Structure formats: C-alpha cells, structure tokens
Image (tube, rainbow, N blue to C red; front, top):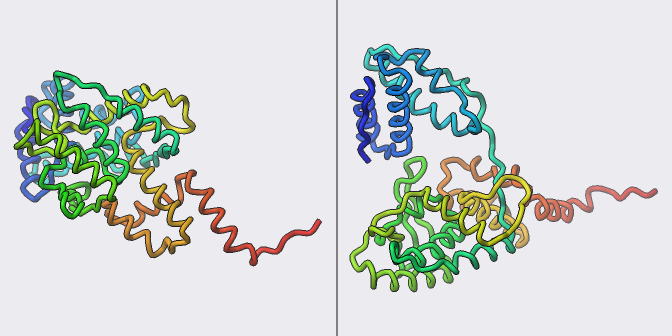
Length: 320
C-alpha cells in the first residue's frame, strides 16, 4: 500500500516507511497511522515544518471514547518516526514512554458452546449476494477456520491458495505478528470443510490467489471480518453477555481457553503442553500464552476443580 503524504513531513515519512520495509517489516498498520498523522498535521498544524512538542502532544491527546490501548497504537509509530528524524540530525520531539500510561489488559469474551452454535447457525444462513457472488461461501468457512485454528483476523484474510495445503492438511501463516511464520495443522473435519469449499470456489475463481477472495477476487481487509461478525452476531439474537462485548479476536482467545480446559480434563501436564500451544498460536513469548491461565475467568472452574482433587489430601478437613 502506497500512501500519499501531503504535510511538510511527507517526504521523511515515505523514507522512514521505506527503511522499515527494506529491513523486512511489513509496516502496514503503522503506515496507516502515519498517514493519519500526516492528515492531522495538514488540518491542525499546516505551517509547522518541525515535529515539535506541541504537535506531538496534540496528537497524543486521548480522544472522546478512545481506549488507552488505541491511543498507544496511535502514538508508537509517531514516536518511532521522531527517533528516526533525530537519527538523521533533524530535531524532533519524541513522545515520552510514560504517555499515555500503562497498557490495559483486555479481558476477552470466551464463547460458550451455545453462543458458538447460534453464531455458526446464523452464518450458515448467509444469503447469496449478486454483487459478491461467493461471499455466502466464504463467510461460514472463514469464521470456522478462525475459531478452529485460533488464527488472527489478518492471518485468515491473507491466506493464499498456496498457503492452504489440502493434501497434508496445513495452513502456512506467513510474516505474521512479530515478523514470524508458522505452520498450523487442520483438524480432519476442518480439512474436509476446506476441501469442499475450495472445490466450490474453483468453479467461480479458477485462477484465484486469495483462499478467501472478495468480490474482486482479491483479499478482504481484516475490518471486513469485524463488521461481518457483529452483523451475524446481532442476527443470531444471542442476547446480552457478561463482560466486554464480543469481538472477532475472541475466537482466538476462545480457542486457546477451550484447548487448555480440555487438556486439564485429560490430566495433561500443562507445563509440557503450553509451549506447543504457544508455537501453534504464533506467540513470540510464552508469557503471552500464560496470559490465558491467569486472566481468563472461564478457565478457573476447570483449573480449580483439578487443583482441589490433587490437593485434597494436603488440606485436612475442618471438623466443627
């Protein structure tokens, strides 16, 4: 994606993004935030030729109804850009690390079996759209792949036909978060579903590149999944849920938690199995996977039940 920059910082922004990509970083979402900052400068500081404290801190203000984590994502590429400018000998204000504060851990919604059943029943009713003639085939499959494989939304929409090996049953996830690639095995029922889907899609897109093509035959944007998820979630009429509002990314969280719960029920040694889950999910550090053990309430009942059975002989009963 080539953004057009129109502020006085435009030339340096383009060079900065080119440098990031030259060393192998995709730098797609960060480039979009830089482009938003470029438009912000044109609107609010059109005559400013230097990245001053005033400009930077104006950008770093928390907007109405904006989550602090969203603000952190907005600030990070601007901070990196300022550091880049300073490295070139161009004075620029670097937003301090303490602004806006500590990132808040989002407590995900873990889908129940009933919620998953209702949602997938709704997507299976996706109607044919003449403006997007294969959309009704894509939606039921892509959401099942998201949940059953624990993928990130961006990983699912960027799958190519070559990435999906329907012979041995694997997905190749290329250059994902942390600039890492990995291979994800498909469960037998998911593999059968993908084979049937691919056969149907080849009739319409015989030379397609995207495994889940949009109406032009190209790749969907990941925000398509967010919009579509909420549309079908509302259509499923599941009703109110406790905690935060469900999101597409919660399929990935639910996959991890349900897998951990299953291992506990099977009396697996989590210390041994957790690294495998970490690699499967494409986590850079094991602490990212360990998060599911500590912060997801849905995991507690199974863990507590297992712990109580193991420790029963260590804690004497209290006789009244």
